[in-house]
Length: 296
Image (cartoon, rainbow, N blue to C red):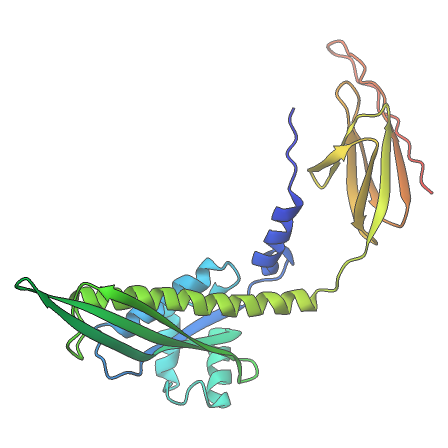
């Protein structure tokens, strides 16, 4: 039967992308409390769109648990939360965090929208080409301490757009363009927040010391598995985390498998003596396997 090996590169990638899951800890609860338009440009339903973009981007990282939207809205109403002061006043942040069971409170906003439309005339035809830029901000507050944990902003733009920006009220193609820019900007900001979280997890996790372990078998050529993952064939030399107790299985077709829990220590040598699997007739009981280990 073909064995599947977990490539080391994929394992490292998993550590970087999903540290809360691999560390065995529950992902922190995050509550998206506000998304506002601080510009003079009217964008229909921008607050609701921003909330959805933020929640979707946070959830897609796999690093957070989202507080329920209805519960967040009820709690904001109950404490009279004002976005102008809610994430600035530590008392509000701490109280809201306790109500929601949230570690972090997240708020986003549209800081600025700029555009310029150029008119081209020729051969009796008039066309318009526009440039537009959007600046978004993200603020994350540690609800347990009432302090700002993360704050950042990003500016995205599009140019040579085949339509005209002429009004402070955005609709149609202009609105779709701004939606796309907002969504991309939110993803980038959440990505930066996610990177900071990953760095904190890695800094808090002490680097493990690996030691060399030599594994052999009689007869040689047997499969070596640790925790159900194939690591190679005997004889082999592995580098494993010192101090860990690992279940090592050595198996070879036609022989009874050898399985033992071993404390990993420097220069450990393991020799698994395998015995041929006896052929038993119907109704007979198979003889139990004798195994051996030689460690230094």
